[in-house]
Image: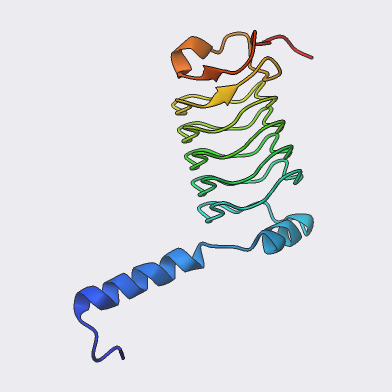
Length: 160
């Protein structure tokens, strides 16, 4: 169907789909640009991406879609993840120390062994996320109010 044959609604939908695709980036491209010094990846779509063990300290992923992403063991220290969609992401063993997670959606994410010390969790939604005794939070984080699921015994809140 050509542009002349498309209705106004169809053209708007096609433009919206193009805009969504423009926000997508291949993991290899992200890692290459990061290695070259680029840190601004705000609002990109990395849904389901495998970024396990990636070193992305200080990256700006504000508003990014990382839903269902594999971030096991990733270094996201000092990262800006404000408003990011991390729903269902696996952050097991990830380093998120000093990260900005304000208003981020982490519902249903895996936080086993994740280091969240110094991270800003203001407005973050962590409901139904799993954590364990190896997950690190600041002592003043109200874990009981966050709706997290403790897996295993205890909940180590002390510095390593």
